[in-house]
Image (cartoon, rainbow, N blue to C red; front, side, top):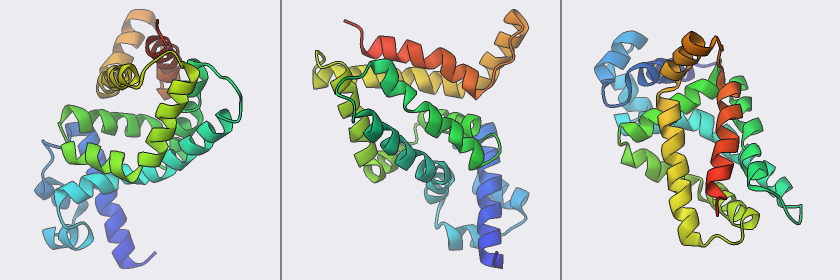
Length: 208
């Protein structure tokens, strides 16, 4: 690995940890450069500005996740019919595979996405919906195929309610895990969260 790539990856690793812990808004470039042991010129050279750095941190996961989601949904759509739960289950494998992208990658990605929405990072939503539009449309079309009685308007609202549920769960994942452990003696990881989340979301989106 060249020195330039090593510096770039170091900045990404430090930024990811700080963004996950403190959020995007409350993490300054000065804090990132101090922790990474680099100067501001290095960040500017590799990323240009903080918005681009935020996108780069998320894109390490998205560039692995979204093609895998598309492949899973294409395979699912080879079936003549399928359930809403199967649509959401198609996301499980790609999400869990993020643990191979980075250590504890699934939980870290879910937390970062939650941070992105609760911190009102509008540019991040724009980035995701434009760069990965094809994958997102395939997901919407799969939802419509699973519940053909729903109109596109109804799907629009239900998927936004779904997103809200996911964002709250992701942003609160650490606190929820502590409550589950203290109140129910249950040790919760990303797989356990998906076990609880997928049936709930599928039932909500497909409700009469």
